[in-house]
Image 1: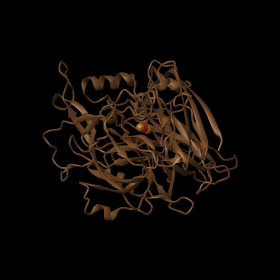
Image 2 (image 1 turned 60 degrees about the horizontal axis):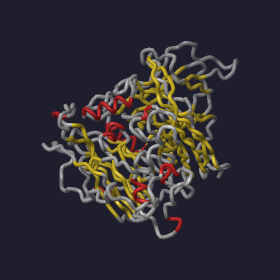
Image 3 (image 1 turned 135 degrees about the vertical axis):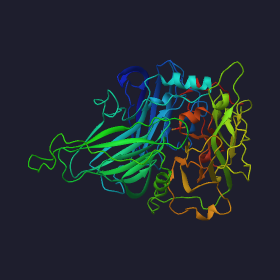
Image 4 (image 1 turned 90 degrees about the vertical axis):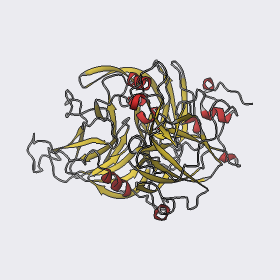
Length: 556
Ligand code: C2O
């Protein structure tokens, strides 16, 4: 592979949407941000220079970061943030991945405007295992607030309430014609009849899973989270924040001058408020040649797709269940067949006491909180990876994340009276190459709600899912250990559970969290510490010398 160099100047820019202008944080003045394009096997070096009045980090979401944890990006997990006026070089190699991933800010709510595609092409001369597309098009979903998003999350955390919901969803930064004032801010995809297009879908929205559909068209799903899947056709897709999906769009042979809506709106399971508006983009057929018959006259009304009901959980479960790894000789599914450590983590919402002299807007005057195994993660002020590597973990984190679940317990039954959570900066420590099975169980403590859980530094296999309480006596018999989907983000079903497996072959500190920023801000996050192996190529190398300013610690 070669090295691909990028420079990201993080700078403010004025952007107008929904008839109001605000100053947002961008990369190189672009919104959405620039694409990273690399082939499998290439090295990527991105110099990020911070020119804005906020601390910044960038995360390369889904990039495995094999032994390059220093480049992963979550603030205070693998690095201290880049202060105003300073820079940091993210240096990593793309190993064994091909498809679409994305980059986004990983501090506070800056990812509301700081995101862009990562496009991973196969190695030179290696074809796709599906029809070669005529063109490839990134389609990024986002959320737009008229107000300043940093002010919104700051206020929510101060008052303990829920943050204001967004004013619009966007496709490639544009809300589309169904919102006031936005007809001119519509993403248009012009296609040629008969051609095949690869759409690289990315859900970069902060707080909503989305249904997506193109009127009168069926698409073929070929890749999720940078891993090929067995192709299947779908009229509607579900994509959670943090997930990416590559689909083939087969333009029909004759539709000259016809236009179709592509729309997205939320799949929402919680009892809280959400933005139930619809973003639309337009698929427009170009006239292939002057001699072709015009089947549709110009200016026909647009064709609109129908999307499932906002709370259609059975659609969600069916769609997820259709995803399967290729599991071929060329693209094997290396599912761990044996397990060294089994974990059950509950994920869900809860409450924290309201600080004295404060009025809180959460349930019964408390503050909203969210947990993994009833621990709401407290962010440290020293990066966990630095503290670990330099042997200075005392006062930064403790390795005692509770791994013994309080069984038996009815996680999805009547909520308990006591919804208070604990706080802490606790890690699970795993020896190198531990084979892990993790069941994530949604709780009903403050209402059942699905949670898109994202693991850094790894892909995992989604071996099982179900509703109600996970049953360790019965459910494992139904696990798919042959061709389960391999991905980095999975929706824990509302009122249900999901089981994943992975091999801890990547030393470092790896964040795992709900990819709803509201829940992440409330503490639905934890971290794994994967220790070095014995061999030199099983150890995390020292931090890059190119970034000395961020390494205040001295090795003992
Ligand atoms: Cu896409 Cu930890 O994030």
